[in-house]
Length: 357
Ligand SMILES: Cc1cc2nc3c(=O)[nH]c(=O)nc-3n(C[C@H](O)[C@H](O)[C@H](O)COP(=O)(O)OP(=O)(O)OC[C@H]3O[C@@H](n4cnc5c(N)ncnc54)[C@H](O)[C@@H]3O)c2cc1C
Image 1 (cartoon, helix red, strand yellow):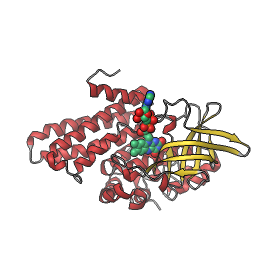
Image 2 (cartoon, rainbow, N blue to C red):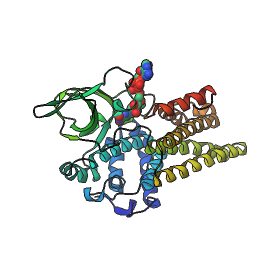
Image 3 (cartoon, protein in one colour):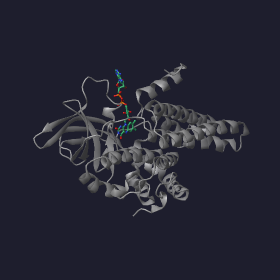
Image 4 (cartoon, rainbow, N blue to C red):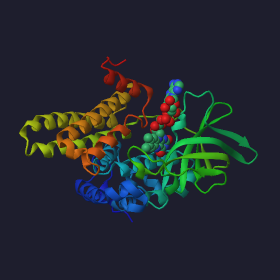
């Protein structure tokens, strides 16, 4: 179903013509996607038909196994044109990555339809990394039953819960081990709340999901060191793409107001530098502190670029429907989404004018 043109084996960049064609289409659908979500607007189907989804899936699972730098470049380009679609794709990709690390029968059954875009999936993992971590007890637990596992509790955040066939989640066992599970959204005892009305990105159809004695389809034991990690490079790629969309507004206003040209140029230089660092980080092994530093840098850039776009667009940009007001709201998403403590701390220090810890 997908055209192989998006990724060629071993490439470090996606095919520019395929990316442009995909992103042009996503931009046309963006207003509908922001309202009803990419599953219904056609955006998710175009990710599949362009070969974008297949890039995230290993070749023995029916995908094209694109390189990490190529995938990050694609995610950033998509985020620049439709952040809702990029968020949904990043959560889908996280789920696929965990499934790809699972047992052979799971991989064989699930990966090929995922590569074709036939069985949308998502993740509910933040309870293991960045959500409700200050509470005394884990909010989602797994206990061994006679015939498998039973999940009880809450996934506070699941993008596209109501639109997906499965949720890949993680829960804490009685012995304190973290396990991943693939849970069909039709499972008995699973209650997906209506999607939340959010400051931005409501089209992501993000819900909380309650589990009452839910028996998951499959358990995946994470490999050593393979626990949940927030603030990965994909989250930085999305922030970089969103920043570029805002910088484009400043650059466009600079067409008739030359005094804005150095502002646009300076922000663009920063965005180019960030992209280069991202590619380098994806190519080499990177320490977790450096990964978090990159994310904090991206957070700072996306928020400043959005404010610059709004300032350049003036009152006209403050009117609902102008791209500047949407980008402004969407930039704030990065302050709360998948932010490890060190990233939140760096943002807070910048806001308070303090040196980073
Ligand atoms: C649009 C959107 C989509 C998302 N999609 C997904 C998804 O698909 N999958 C996924 O896994 N995650 C997802 N997330 C979750 C995200 O990655 C973060 O985990 C989440 O934003 C963390 O916020 P929280 O309110 O749950 O954090 P919490 O830490 O639970 O904070 C909640 C409240 O608790 C209090 N609090 C926090 N820390 C402390 C403390 N140390 N001591 C005392 N009180 C404290 C504060 O009052 C705070 O307002 C999504 C988030 C958003 C906004």
